[in-house]
Image (cartoon, rainbow, N blue to C red; front, side, top):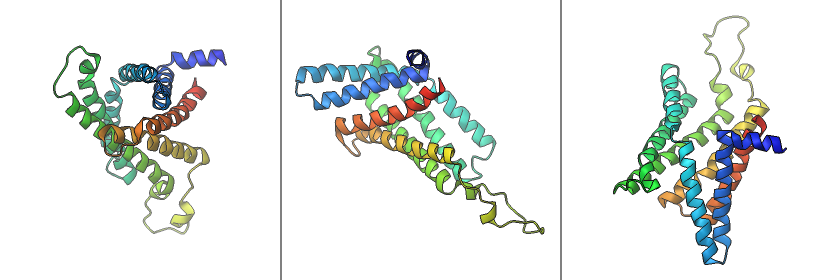
Length: 224
């Protein structure tokens, strides 16, 4: 147990999830506490950990744009699933880039007057990325098997019907899709709160962050 925890926090993804869990727990406790002094301290912890976690995703745009390039070179526009994945990667890439532009401001190194405007745009792309991710997972769960059917020319004695050729989503794949929908659905509340589109408060946002963090951390934990 201790050795696995050590491997977990030594991995970049595991350490990021650990910091995220402490951050969202601090946010929940700060919202519940009656002590203003403690609330200020916990809010400081939350903000500092949020800044620290930005360093882990500083180069996240590379993977997003690389995935975009792969989709454009294959069938990014050849299917609904491909278009949803392409839109998701594009929005995530733009989110990472825009957030990176404000890193020095967030660190207090170089203040810029356009920080708030850029972060609003970054969070907007984050919202779109998570939305496309949820829609893509639902599409793959409900429509994916039928969409992946090979096109038939209508000839041949052994030709099967579409319903015969359709293979259901494997249980493990279906479970992963459902988990993705829950995790991304929880995280959708964060940009909605930051943008003021659907203010839910620190308590609700922090609680959903705890849930999504534990679910994603479980996957990383099993892998290390």
